[in-house]
Image (cartoon, rainbow, N blue to C red; front, side, top):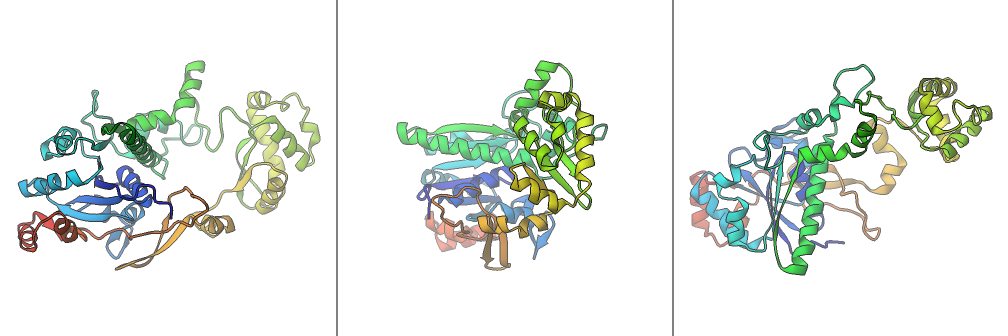
Length: 396
């Protein structure tokens, strides 16, 4: 198995989605992940429904290949545990509110003094500087604040939240790639680093080409539903029985489409000849294509158009996507056994190395499942561990 990060150790102080996804991917690549959770309730997503025997689905989705250490960092003994662990780790990832790490004694300056070549990644809502540095940021808040939500939805419609939490998840990917870059730098120079990612900058980063268009036109773009302001036809259409997506991204594809549907005269129609022409006659183009598409069933269109190299797809439900032969063939869905919850499924890290199948090494941990093991490895006696459990310093 391709495990390039084997031998590296990570202290993971993150919760919810962005940080846990980052550290899950580090774990998938072989790093040992110690998930440091609050002693009382742990990662809050453990309590987000729906549940599998009391374990939240969101938590289960982003916490495989980790160990759980449940510790109260508001106590001196809890902080001492972390300080004892830091010299043995390579990477720290945290997602606390601005200023919290200083109060808990796990800020970069404190931990760097214990481990000079430490790589320290900070994840926040709005960044650690600026007027909003102390504001809490969740995915939907940044969809709204960044302007992303002003673009989503149908023309004339109200605000629409993207339900896949793209800002959270992509912030996790930025953290992951930044950590890999920091590891390369440390390998070359022997020096650690502090890196920072935020949901705010991820959201603004998403808007790169939208903002370029805004600067050119000087007006707020209209919402365009499933469509695209710069391409046409490039949106959902209703077949005779179900919707499908058609993506005509250039003039060659438009010519293929026209020939496929037996409407060659549209190729040289001055309203539709080029993509700028079709965008300028957006409503007419969409109406013309809709009149064609509604004459046949969805699957007939997808078979015909795909076979001729015209991008199109059914608008699948989750169940349809999971049962599609392509999904099954790619191995992106993982089956594994959880020691207490039984057979489980998850989504693999979406990278394939040398064609090797992807697997789950360890199931998402129970709260404090590895506390005793981690503390014993750190040199704590069984009696001292029992005492800390009795005093609610740790859970295990």
